[in-house]
Image (cartoon, rainbow, N blue to C red; front, side, top):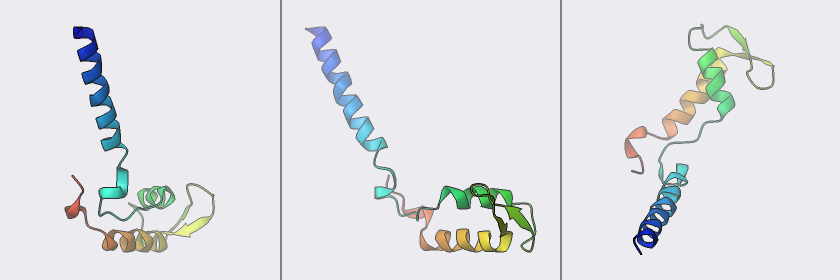
Length: 85
Protein backbone atom coordinates (compact mmCIF):
# COMPACT_ATOMS: atom_id res chain seq x y z
CA UNK A 1 0.00 0.00 0.00
CA UNK A 2 2.85 2.38 0.83
CA UNK A 3 4.42 1.78 -2.58
CA UNK A 4 1.15 2.73 -4.26
CA UNK A 5 0.86 5.95 -2.29
CA UNK A 6 4.48 6.89 -2.96
CA UNK A 7 4.19 6.17 -6.68
CA UNK A 8 0.97 8.19 -6.86
CA UNK A 9 2.63 11.13 -5.10
CA UNK A 10 5.68 10.98 -7.40
CA UNK A 11 3.54 10.83 -10.54
CA UNK A 12 1.46 13.84 -9.44
CA UNK A 13 4.65 15.75 -8.68
CA UNK A 14 6.15 14.84 -12.06
CA UNK A 15 3.04 15.84 -14.00
CA UNK A 16 2.73 19.13 -12.14
CA UNK A 17 6.38 20.08 -12.59
CA UNK A 18 6.45 19.32 -16.32
CA UNK A 19 3.50 21.60 -16.95
CA UNK A 20 5.27 24.35 -15.03
CA UNK A 21 8.52 23.90 -16.95
CA UNK A 22 6.74 23.71 -20.30
CA UNK A 23 4.95 27.03 -19.88
CA UNK A 24 7.99 28.87 -21.27
CA UNK A 25 7.26 32.32 -22.65
CA UNK A 26 3.49 32.06 -22.32
CA UNK A 27 3.51 33.74 -18.93
CA UNK A 28 6.54 35.97 -19.46
CA UNK A 29 6.46 39.58 -20.53
CA UNK A 30 9.78 39.28 -22.38
CA UNK A 31 9.80 39.63 -26.14
CA UNK A 32 11.29 36.55 -27.81
CA UNK A 33 14.64 37.09 -29.55
CA UNK A 34 15.87 34.78 -32.31
CA UNK A 35 18.88 32.63 -31.49
CA UNK A 36 20.61 34.01 -34.59
CA UNK A 37 20.37 37.54 -33.18
CA UNK A 38 21.65 36.45 -29.77
CA UNK A 39 24.67 34.73 -31.34
CA UNK A 40 25.42 37.78 -33.48
CA UNK A 41 25.05 40.06 -30.46
CA UNK A 42 27.58 37.95 -28.57
CA UNK A 43 29.99 38.17 -31.50
CA UNK A 44 29.59 41.98 -31.66
CA UNK A 45 29.98 42.53 -27.94
CA UNK A 46 33.61 43.75 -28.13
CA UNK A 47 33.43 45.30 -31.59
CA UNK A 48 32.70 48.79 -32.87
CA UNK A 49 29.32 49.46 -34.56
CA UNK A 50 30.89 49.97 -38.00
CA UNK A 51 32.69 46.60 -37.95
CA UNK A 52 31.29 43.60 -39.79
CA UNK A 53 31.06 40.03 -38.58
CA UNK A 54 30.22 36.77 -40.25
CA UNK A 55 26.67 35.73 -39.34
CA UNK A 56 26.70 32.74 -37.01
CA UNK A 57 24.00 30.77 -38.79
CA UNK A 58 23.99 31.53 -42.52
CA UNK A 59 27.50 32.94 -43.05
CA UNK A 60 26.58 36.33 -44.51
CA UNK A 61 28.33 39.54 -43.48
CA UNK A 62 26.36 41.75 -41.09
CA UNK A 63 27.18 45.07 -39.45
CA UNK A 64 27.34 45.14 -35.68
CA UNK A 65 25.24 48.32 -35.67
CA UNK A 66 22.38 46.47 -37.39
CA UNK A 67 22.63 43.57 -34.95
CA UNK A 68 22.60 45.84 -31.91
CA UNK A 69 19.64 47.78 -33.31
CA UNK A 70 17.60 44.57 -33.70
CA UNK A 71 18.40 43.39 -30.20
CA UNK A 72 17.78 46.80 -28.64
CA UNK A 73 14.37 47.11 -30.31
CA UNK A 74 13.29 43.71 -29.02
CA UNK A 75 14.54 44.49 -25.51
CA UNK A 76 12.66 47.80 -25.49
CA UNK A 77 9.36 46.02 -26.17
CA UNK A 78 9.50 43.79 -23.10
CA UNK A 79 10.92 44.28 -19.65
CA UNK A 80 12.32 41.68 -17.32
CA UNK A 81 10.52 43.16 -14.32
CA UNK A 82 7.13 41.60 -15.08
CA UNK A 83 8.07 37.93 -15.17
CA UNK A 84 5.47 35.23 -14.86
CA UNK A 85 6.64 33.64 -11.63
